Length: 91
Image (cartoon, rainbow, N blue to C red; front, side):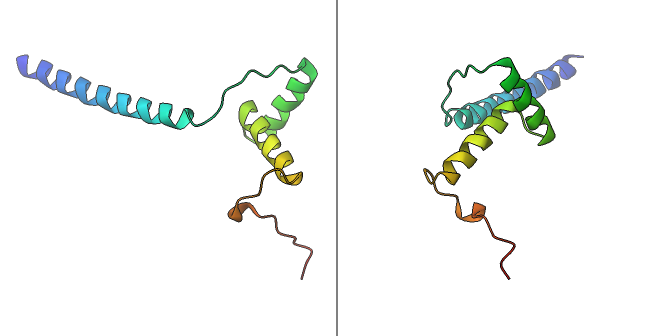
């Protein structure tokens, strides 16, 4: 029985360090985005919620996608080279 508790403690220490590393990596990735509070009316939120679900996105990801698309369309940011729209009508 003494050996099994040693294995348990070893496993617990290993999983804790993996969880800690994952948490540190997640925090580093999340720290790259700016956080802010957005107040919108219920009707707009409901429409965004449905649209996000239709596109298999979270509401936050949907808002970010829509903002980026609007910025690209207005010429305020450039599309990444792999995101350059193609005109399929041209032959």
